[in-house]
Image (cartoon, rainbow, N blue to C red; front, side, top):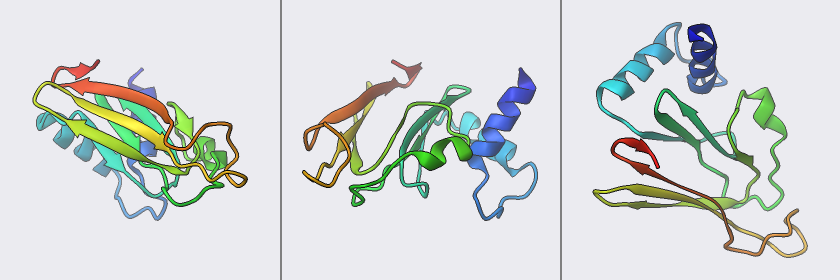
Length: 133
C-alpha cells in the first residue's frame, strides 16, 4: 500500500521538466500535512482533474479559454480522479465552516464538444476543516 501511495504522490508533484529533486515530493507532502493543508490548486495540464491523496485534494485547474480542450493527456500524466476537458473555470467559496469548489464549464456553441449549456456546474465538492464532505 505504501508503495502505491509513493508512486501517486511522486507522479502528481513531479513537474514535466523534472525540476524537483528525488525526495522533494515527500518533503512537500509532509510540509502540507504539518500545516493542515486540505487542498492544493495547481495548473499546467489544461484539464480539470481532482485527486485525493492522504486527506489532501490536489486540484488541477482547467484552461478557461480553450473551447476544444480534451482529456487525452490525463492518463499519460497519471491523473486518477475525476477528469474533465476544458474550457471552464473554478468557482471557490471559502467560509470558516467549509470551502466549496465548483467546476463551471465555458461552452462556445458550435465549437465546444459537449452537450452542456454554458455556465453549467459540472462538478461540485466541499471541504471542511476535518476533511472532505
